[in-house]
Amino acid sequence: MKLRGLYAITPDGADLIDKLRQALEGGISVLQYRRKKEKSLSEAKGVLSLARRYHVPLIVNDDVDLALEIGAEGVHLGRDDGDLAKARKKMKGKILGVSCYDDLEAARAAVRAGADYVAFGSIFASPTKPGAVRAPLGLFEEAKSLKVPLAAIGGITLENAPAVIAAGAGLLAVISDLFDAPDIKSRALQYGKLFQ
Image: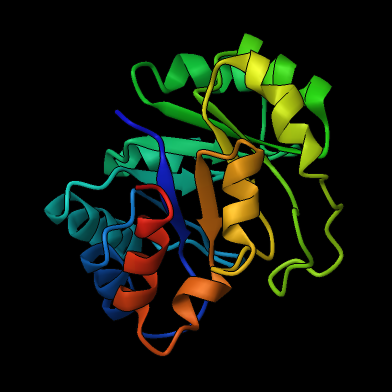
């Protein structure tokens, strides 16, 4: 499975399925189901069904059990989301992504524990997590030696995305700049062109 391109993360709020359909029509590469408050099993199943229709892998944020229950392609874990080695065992044959913030050592440890990709960020100021630690673009050059796909998250827009890709990010994790766009499908297509 190729982990490269636009990595859409579900926004909070209404009209989720309609917004996701537009993003999927625009050709996103990976989709993450993320809910700040309560995750819903029926909503998660609906998101998975839609992602499958477009042959896009679904990653569940911070919930190994939910990912396994619905049959998602993977899980993404942060600093406080449990033991990576245990998650790797449970998620045998599935994608394991790990948030490493601005910490290259954490990324090395994550790869040793079996992470399939690591994420750094917040790269820029983010409307979703305004107080998040900032990760310098130079981190991607240093992290190339890890030999896994590198994801960038935090404040990414079409305008600053080329610099992030040039720095070495193969996945751009985007929420606001994609789902707040007046035309979600068109915005996804524009991101896709950056990887051609």
